[in-house]
Image 1 (cartoon, rainbow, N blue to C red):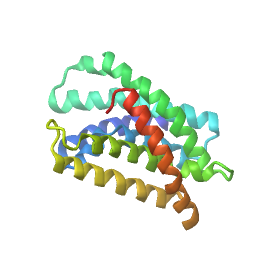
Image 2: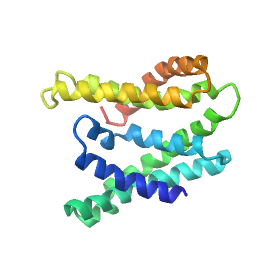
Image 3: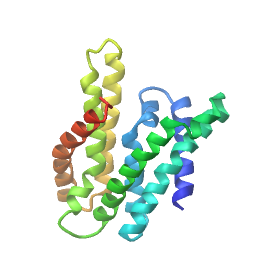
Image 4: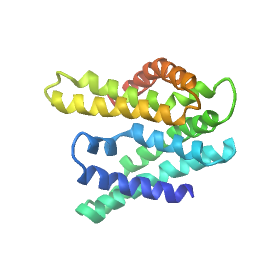
Length: 196
């Protein structure tokens, strides 16, 4: 199942970017959305922790060449993009995100002390990406109106996913509260890795 989800994620992600209007098209260019996809896969499917982590990794790693396959088929991009250094780098990020968000998806559905924190993980990664866009406001390379649209979409999506995966209003509210320090950590990590 995970390879099929990854194939669909990558291919449809490119189609999303290509044909949807801004700012929604930017979701297709969002690494946070891919992390959330790994989370939702393991949250929804009742696999054990080890199988969930492997499944999330497989999903994200397969999604990378699938994305470039769609680009080659739809707009005649170079076929070497499926396996070049950039693709391998993104697959490496997929492994890391698969471990973190695959595990979080399992924890979010299992009773325990970390459940509420895990419920806030999708919002945290979306909010962290929104913070990157906030840091771009005023940069002449980026249009402020476009950035505000993308920020709004990320924040609303983060809230909606938390409302969906939380089991009670209390857990949803606490999940969003937990997302705030996780957002700061995510923003720092994304900045260190050069995404800022």
